Image (tube, rainbow, N blue to C red; front, side):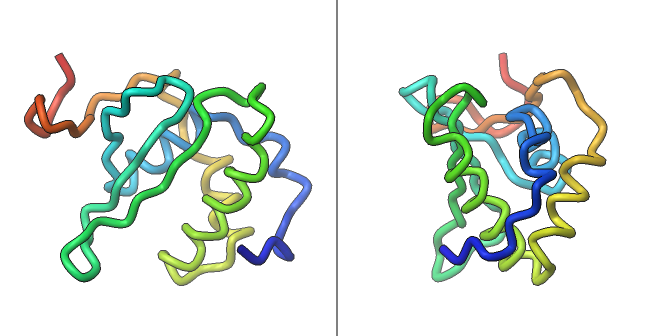
Length: 114
């Protein structure tokens, strides 16, 4: 992934702000067996498969920053916008304090989590 776009404001991005941004833009958070990793998939499918984005569940994890850089860069490509504009929008997204109303799993139908 090309990381030449990196903006120093990336240090301000929290897991909850990324989650809130993705959910507000139609992404679904998927259940995943390892709690240290958050997995999101797009509604839009390419060749019959959704686009999958991953992010460590804590800013304290060693690989949080590179995952975040890749995720924002990939979102920029997906949304056909500059990654710095995606970053600005993530930072401006109102927080839901980490409440994730919509999840997708094989066991639970899409909708509100139980």
